[in-house]
Image 1 (cartoon, rainbow, N blue to C red):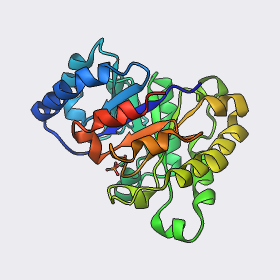
Image 2 (image 1 turned 60 degrees about the horizontal axis):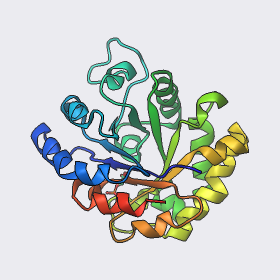
Image 3 (image 1 turned 30 degrees about the horizontal axis):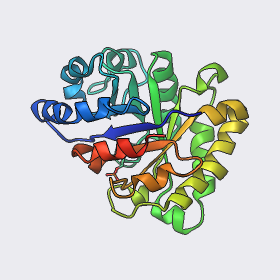
Amino acid sequence: MRKPFVAGNWKMNKTVDQASVLVQELLPGLQAVPEVEKVLCPPFTSLMVLSAQLAETGVGLGAQNLHWEASGAYTGEVSPSMVKEFCNYVIIGHSERRAYFAETDETVNKKLKAALAAGLTPIVCIGESLEEYEAGQTSEVVKRQVLQGFKEIDNAIASQIVVAYEPIWAIGTGKAATSEGANAVHRDFIRPVLASLFGSAIAQSIRILYGGSVTAANAAEYFKTSDIDGALVGGASLKPDFLKIVEAARP
Ligand code: PGA
């Protein structure tokens, strides 16, 4: 049994005060759903304050990025141990980072190894572009992203990884993938590649989330499927509506 997992990716939204107010609004509702693993991923600037607010609540805190080096001359970057001071989770390789900040499967792999070594639970994002989708290349793209991004990861820690399948054409567009379509990608492409890397028992234990225009209205459809184990939510995670998505993930 894979425990359902719902994470909110706040992206570049909310000052510390605004973030703290949103947490206050969400917290009682989030705590009422212990059957679901819940994680909030605000900007770096809010991590310190939110880590105090979320301590002992059962609601996890995640960063949206990290650097793979432990320290040094990397202006503007944040190391795994710095993230670990406040967080237990980290998003890696989001398509916006790949598109605007030159992240590749290779940097994803370095970040993934560094995150695991620091004891963080990585949420690794993969997904095809509209062009690739229309050309029927989804399978090929997600396979490549998993094979290269997950290279040289020990079987012993692989089940800690959370995968987020986020077709780029569905992110922030209101054009969500269908639940059948997303589930087929999880079941037929992603899980088999994970099995080829780590064996089928570990592949069966890895949570694979869907992300891309998930809302309170469509969330339940995804969670009914066999291989969608939760959601990575952008826009709808900035509103009290996020609670409805978490509730819909209850097994
Ligand atoms: P969205 O974003 O829910 O706003 O489409 C999802 C994501 O980018 O993680």
